[in-house]
Image 1 (cartoon, rainbow, N blue to C red):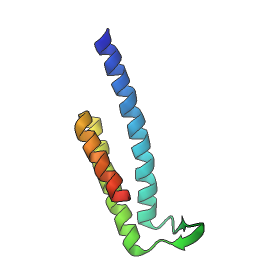
Image 2: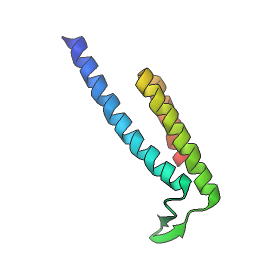
Image 3: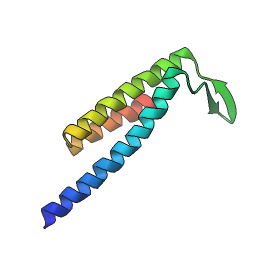
Length: 91
């Protein structure tokens, strides 16, 4: 009974995490492709440079790897480590 509950909670967490990562992937891919051309910095719209687009491409690649890992094997500690790396990359 408890095991099934844990498995169900883990599955919900996995689905929620994948949904959030999918949104990050979609936005970062759109920026990398040049579909999103401006960003707001300190209330002002600023053009996204080619260097920034390359960084967002790297973010999209990293997110895709994390998503692949989560769908194939949910190792909570390893996932946290990968998400921390993504956080550092974005910030």
